[in-house]
Length: 436
Ligand code: ATP
Ligand code: MG
Image 1 (cartoon, rainbow, N blue to C red):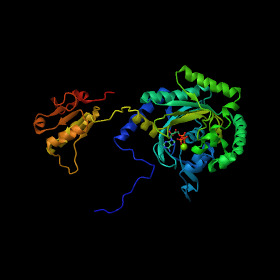
Image 2 (image 1 turned 120 degrees about the vertical axis):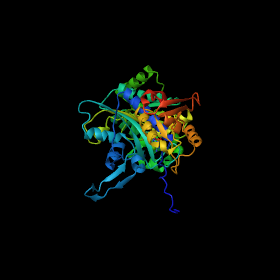
Image 3 (image 1 turned 45 degrees about the vertical axis):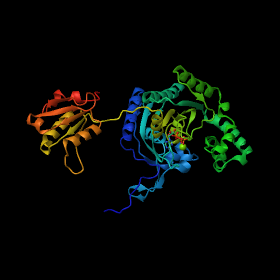
Image 4 (image 1 turned 60 degrees about the vertical axis):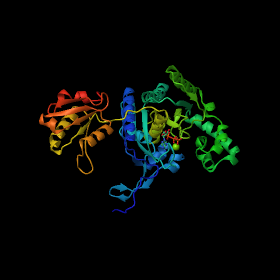
């Protein structure tokens, strides 16, 4: 008897188990279809990167880089250079790095998407985990409001394909660096005049990154943030025209939105268009997708300047919202369950099952913890519980005639038919539930 203590998963890092994992696979397949419809191609970058990438890309003075990253010093030996490494807290910086490193924009722009785990050392709560998953889309090397609009339309098409209804779109414009500088000066003056109301974070950021103060999660600071000078009021004609063009494109496509002048986003690399998709059904963690234009990021990480726009979706939050909205997700079940009452039938049964699978039929073979097959009745019970539409009965009578009984368990339950054991091609198609 073992008395060793159990080992638990790390807090905020979740196992994704059946049947929940089926929802993930369904979600991912819809993501892939949707991306393909917009001509976005898959990209996969490492989970671990040099900390510098995130510090320079996301911004030194951001929640993510200041306190949320899992970082460590790698050893100095023949495998490592004593580098400071971090688990990726988001996907854009890595994709941008890969684009620069492999000169991906040499022949023009690239529409890319990714899907995978991200790591942030935040307080775990509903909708906020330490390992969570993002789907991200990035259009690199493309300028113009129509690309920003495409990016937003890509997200709305994904919501449509998933059956998600309860979202709203908030839109903002961060302008260009010179406009932000002018706004920043006004912002510092405003917060300095209200220094007594600033919390510790805000005081620290007042001179390093005052825009971040607007992103505060501290309820006591909300009113102060509300009254701060608005970046929208500092936009010049070009930025205003750009923002108007994005809005016109969305209106033309029937996408509702509201302009949120306080939308600053938690990362430093954005300019011009920023947006969030928000739901009111998930409490405080209501942002399901955030993104914007980041024309200065590639340069920031050492590449040639190139325009870019992208977003990231929080997969856990979207799946939770689908549940809240009662969206039915197909639950996979085998097409057939093999009932094998007598061990003598196993070799022939296995051969038949293998042939069925080669014909695209999903078959579950009966098995138990003690290797005994159990009674026909108990096996049929299992067959029923598996959700299969058919039981395949490899009984002695059937085998004597090189046949198998196909018994319906769902529609027309009870109906049964004998089929030839060695020629599944004539009847395999009839078992398949999900003809492609
Ligand atoms: P929040 O304001 O909720 O902290 P964020 O601005 O930090 O979000 P982004 O960096 O823009 O988030 O990431 C895009 C999306 O990823 C978010 O809108 C959210 O859906 C999801 N996300 C971010 N952090 C987490 C987390 N710790 N756990 C689960 N999902 C997350
Ligand atoms: Mg955050």
